[in-house]
Image (cartoon, rainbow, N blue to C red):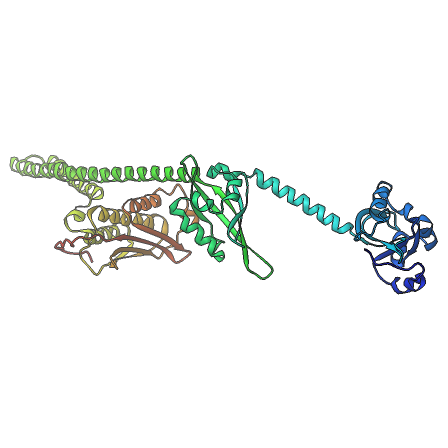
Length: 497
């Protein structure tokens, strides 16, 4: 029962003086619901005088639609019950209706006679707006989560690990409903593929690592494997303890399959390109041999026959003019012989097969210097290499293409070629002193020469780096892992100076 207050024992004047400075709105009514006391905070809020309030002023300040609600909640309860509360709209002095929370308590005297109510009001408009905005935000979030194609989840860690929320997309990915996960705390572990359980739960147990996405496999109820990429964040309480894990899981199965298909296609294309390149080199070798051994020998024989013919013509005493014409044919045949040899060498340098990579590069560098004036310095601590024939061919072709680009585009006067074997790796470094290749040129899809060098090296498992510095030249670094085989030593008959 509420504390009894003897009738007339409360000095309202003294109460008014004591509580007029309190910011909470306070009021008191008699048994007829008429106001018997209001404090200054309430009068200032509604902009009324004490007389207006005491003459049922509260009826004019309460929103018309809330009067009955206010009466039922605040001044009609005459039983000795605990304090009751009600929210209603009260007009402020500036005319704006504000939401207030009123708490009232019925008063009784010592004999149990009902004396009226005493109560308080506080402005809760901002709180209601905040709560409304929060509800709207929660509604929007829930709608977004419920309709998202990705799995949205929250897994609580206390008092024991369990799934607190999962959206409907869970069923698409796992074949189980959110309700099944709520009912079975271990279902998440059971639905994961065995290969992914350790990874997933290590991430759950180590919240500090959650910033890194992880890819796991789910076993769908129909037996399919579904790959998902998860991004999770830890949720902490006021003490900093991690109490839950929230995250999003995206189905990337189709993407992975597409990537796998692309990689397979690229592997097939590279394999085809390797076979084509090998076939091209074989054809070059065959054409080179035919030119050198067939046409070259035929031209040499023709030159010999012409020389014999000239001797016979001289013995027969023919006119010198006729003999000169025959001798000019000898010069034409000799030029043709040189051209055939040069073309045969460009198709497939004999030195590469007969003397090895190091000697072939030295001979080619000397030839380039004679033709163009570009100073080429080749350094190598070894005269042999452990590269296999296809790798040697690739390195030599890269060297040829690089030197061709230097002559055509670099405006360089010198180039240095270093060949070495370091830590079971063969390295060829080519550095010129030209203008330096630009980034635009490096990424230009029409740079067939650069593309050819990269592909040729990659086809055989090598690595190539090309970089340029403005005014400081271009550097090309080619690397091949050395395979287990004994070096084949070839006798080097000589090097160009």
